[in-house]
Length: 93
Image (cartoon, rainbow, N blue to C red; front, side, top):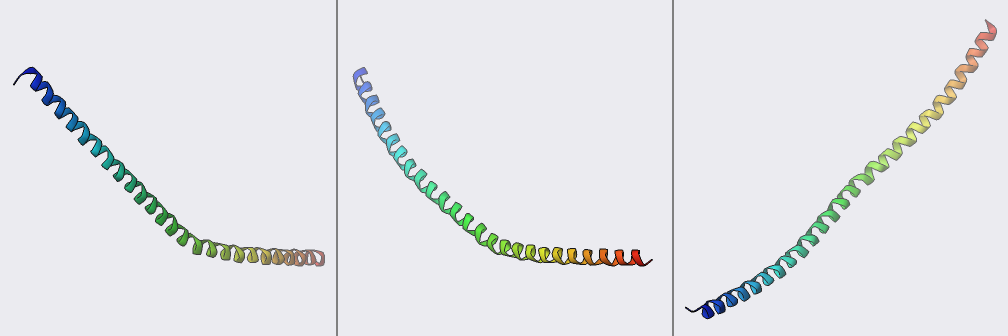
């Protein structure tokens, strides 16, 4: 094989490799896009699951907050009554 024949073979091989690399890059771009879509779908599913779990917990928390608030109001009323009784008892003694 001559130098020129070898060079021609190398150019042909180089061109084939470049075409193959370009095809691989294009295919990888498609995989990248598909992977991005799958990740986005997984994130959406996770957020939806967390939200659906958090909503009932949030409602229970609000309900407990109301119960505690009512308890605090009643405790204040009882404390005022005890103070009045103590004041009356202190004045009587």
